[in-house]
Length: 121
Image (cartoon, rainbow, N blue to C red; front, top):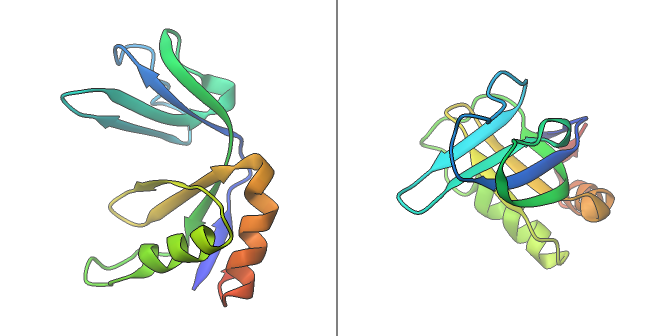
């Protein structure tokens, strides 16, 4: 399985309202529940009015469209990274999954995944 390194710097934010979320950017993930609105966005486009912001994340994308019947892909990737003592933040879309790791752990994450048989490009 191939995992793509994304060439961007990301931030994870918590916002009070959706009016300043950079939804026109190439990458912007919004999660809204009854308790919060969370955003993963390009660090260059932090939403105004963020109540919490965590900068310094890098992203990985599982290549291709994943069929919903596939089981254990994300579990295996997260287990590899957990064994390497790397925390993750994950976003799933209809097509695939995105794994975010802190920038200081990015090279370590790529090495751990490569050593476990994943192709990281």
